[in-house]
Amino acid sequence: MSTTTVNPALCDFCHQKPKFGGYRFCGKTCAAQANNLCTQCHQKPKFANYDYCGKSCAALAAQAQKRPLGAGTMNVPHHGQPTPGAAKGSNYGRRQQHCSGSIHPSATSRSSISAPACPIWPSASGASRPRHAHSAPRPANAYGTAPSPPSEPATCLIPDCDQPAHVDANGIQTSDYCSRRDASSEAVDKNLAQPCIMCLEMPQSRVDHFCGRACREEALSKPE
Image 1 (cartoon, rainbow, N blue to C red):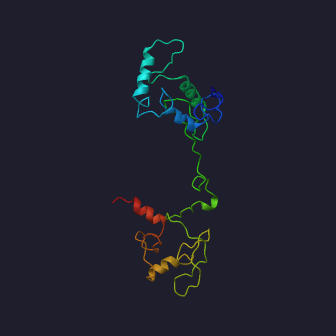
Image 2: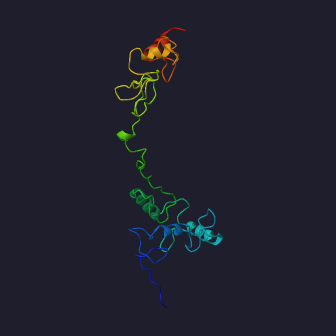
Image 3: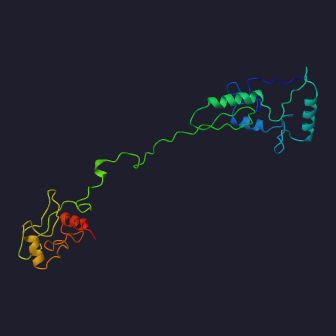
């Protein structure tokens, strides 16, 4: 009569692949399947949330628990009692601290061992990269609006005046009239422009009803 020799170095479930490290199974699949087997016969899957596949194995396990432990007596663990394999699995789960999130399964560990969360690295999108100088917003002018890019100034709107309109130090046109001292007031006198509602002498700006910052601030500082 021939007897089958089981290689202790092979997985306790599939008996095909070598065990992983010092554990009973070769990998996650065999460990999960073995954990779902009946704790008495180790052949059939457990029934629902019980430790046994059926009434027969449950009765055999109950009889084994009632008999005094001795030589040749099977020691069946009580429900919820940790087994040596489970203790190994717990220690092994604590040692696995890699980012992949896949912890090699333990033999009969009943408690789920969650892998540490992977660190969240900054996104490579443009929102996380430092803003370059060319993408920085342009500073606003005295009226709180972004200035237009430098362009060729238009001609003064006063009739018979062929001078270019006034531009600031940055080359940006800030008025529809030339740089003559009396050009703006002349435009108001000739009804070519609406006068400032504060001084009534200079034409209104392009953004509000005042000729400039001085009249605007003076109007805002006056009590109502």
